[in-house]
Image (cartoon, rainbow, N blue to C red; front, side, top):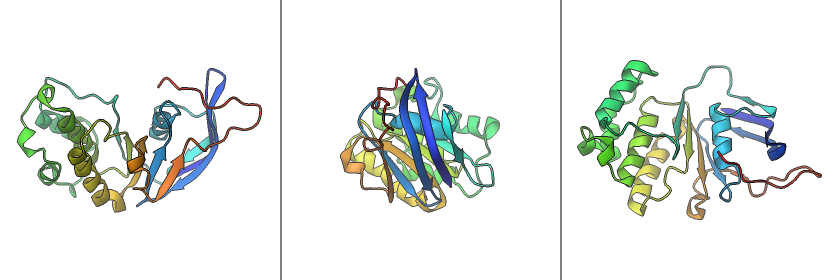
Length: 209
């Protein structure tokens, strides 16, 4: 569960967002939509704890939550293979849940044939699927997806969306997009284009993050 209560984000004395309140429960797929530069990535990073809010509060319930994160800014090690990345997660990060079978996920995301291929040889679509795969093998309670299907062909988009729908019931998912074809794929929406600032404040500036 994610509870955003009257959160505000200020940058260089300008408000990016103010008074946003939203509850996103387990099983929810929340689509965060809006124009480029309006703050979708910023909101994802705020929920991830990567950027501090200026006002308001964010609550994740009574217990610590595991968070999976995918972003265009999230880079893999080019010289390592996908198998190497899995081993890093096993050894240094949150242990892979016993309920997750990496081999099964590799197959469902069409990645099994790339397991021992260096990341630098991945196509755009394969790299996007690999990032998504690594974000879900820890069985996250919260999955934060920042435009994970952008610049992908329809086939790769569908592969990722099929997996999102499969894991939706056991996770809380936030999906940032500016693709109108994805706006209605969630059960709840945060439309940053329609979030109004209080009087006497300037409208949304472009946020450089």
